[in-house]
Length: 153
Picture 1: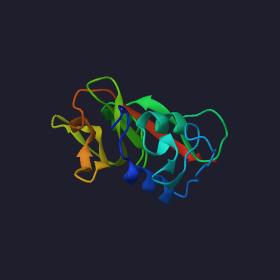
Picture 2: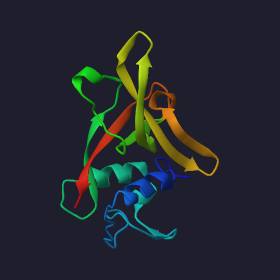
Picture 3: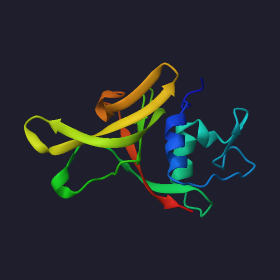
Picture 4: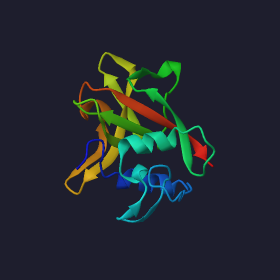
């Protein structure tokens, strides 16, 4: 498997279930589509290409959003994400390795009920799943980023 590539079927199925539009550009490095395993955009199987597609500034069809750095947060100041947003995880080698779907929040610290972290679901292959796992438990201590989905064009 090449660096930065993971199988993100669960995440993409979640995007499609949200009634998003596929975009067949004819160029696998710029679209967001899946015809079959041998005919799909890079954004269908690469964390970095998915990020680039979702945060693009062009008005091409499909889901889009904005990115911010993830950390635990104080809910009294508002939520930086909603269920269904994307959380991406950086590996120890500085490559972005894993995309997950935010499914909820949990109390991050026993000393304060206000500080929350994200719960996420995802799948990297047939043997490895994340099912409502704490975001901090995936690549612990490494940077994470949120893609807050804004809509579909």
